[in-house]
Length: 130
Image (cartoon, helix red, strand yellow):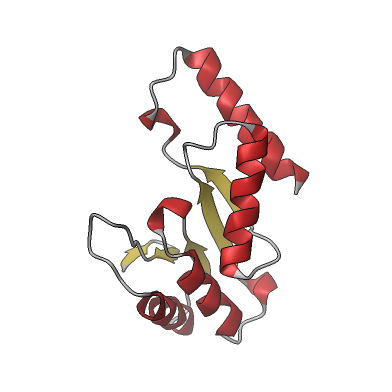
């Protein structure tokens, strides 16, 4: 896992070092035990279940934690963004995220800045709906 200034993220994916769900959960629990309160995950990290398990079982009130997730960049419409957010919450076993953003939107070849703003606004609307 890697430490950020005020948070922690454990990355899992198919092309780099993989940690198991249990190892990810342990990393989250260890970080929370030493004082971290911000936990970062993303659909593209493939670790939502482990992060959610750590958050749910840590013994710290949920409202004292700041959980961040990212909608996968391929979700370009409002409906796709909402489905992605719902999927993340279901995998994590949480009722809400404190912050959710679009992940790597510029990886896609957007035609112009207007299209980028339109896609970003669509994701913002999806998050505000929650």
